[in-house]
Amino acid sequence: MTLTAKNIRTVYIDHDVQDLPNIQPILDYFQGVPREIVDGPTAVFRRVAEAPDPISAAKEVLFLTKNKGAFVRKCPGTKEYTCCGYQILHIGTFCTMDCSYCVLQAYFHPPALQFFVNHDDLFAELDQVLESRNPEIRRIGTGEFTDSMIWEPWSGLSHRLVERFGRQDHAVLELKSKTVNIQGLDKLSHNRKTIMAWSVNTPEIIATQERNTAPLHARLAAAAKCESWGYPLAFHFDPMVIYPGCEQEYEKVVDLIFDHVSPENVVWISLGTFRFMPDLKAIIESRFEKSKIVYGEFITGLDNKMRYFKPLRIKLFQVMAAALKKRAPQAAAYFCMEDDEVWRKSFNQTPDLPSLLDQSAQRVCLLK
Ligand code: SF4
Image (cartoon, rainbow, N blue to C red):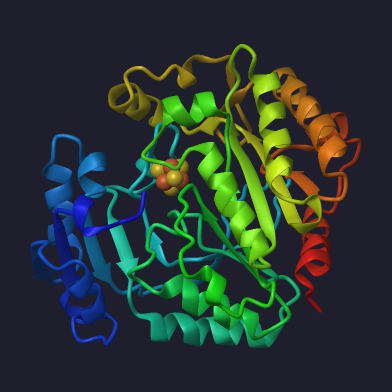
């Protein structure tokens, strides 16, 4: 679900940014929505925190503000599990969609739908990063603290980012979404340096756990459209949820993906089973009363997150490894946050993960 005037109750504007040139077009888009100039985030956070369900309330207020910290940051992996060396481009926080398992519900205190509008600072920092050609910064994505595409079409940010990445050959941008907000991407000079990525799941999990997201067939149709416009693609099976019959259902999703798109254009496919910080359990129980996802066979992992018992994870991953080998043998499939044993038992290897992904990006996105 995109972020529009229909689902926002108030637009707050940080007084620091009210005179930036990109503010007025945004306010024009949100014409008719009450707006208020505020001095920093305190008033916004207080209003959200006072609501009966602050998480739902936070999805209905847009706060236009400045990112005062770094825009490009290392993804916070954990040393106990194999990490992929990804970089986050921090464009905003939180999301209009509402997935039961969403870690962002417990990550921000309180949460807020913030969009950082100091784009001159963003692009100045990005220019520096890209011009440095740092070999450790080759994969950058905006979809870690938010969904990459909910800010379209009113922000224009994806368009600027796609074209900026299109003018260099060292790194790729990944835009990850559960929406189908791809309007306008066809006209951009992307030069294959932007990967359009979708998080995917079984129709059962999408219907029961992912409120306000696009259905699977719509995500795959959007992926096929982007492929026809020359974009490389990626898919993220994360979080995979274990339930009776899930193996066959996830195998069917693999088949559906490759009924829509060609494996040669897929840069990577990640696999990760449902895991959660203990704090998230109470949030899911109170906000998603019908959800049963927190009642599986979980143990506490080395990162203190609850994870499915390892043999259950390996069993599902082995099914997925076989399905992917059959339909997309050349696509780089990888685990987000798993250990060597899981890698060996599922993929018969323990790779240098950053190199595996960099090489795949070099091949499919024509990096130098
Ligand atoms: S789409 Fe992603 S960011 Fe948005 S609610 Fe779902 S999991 Fe969270």
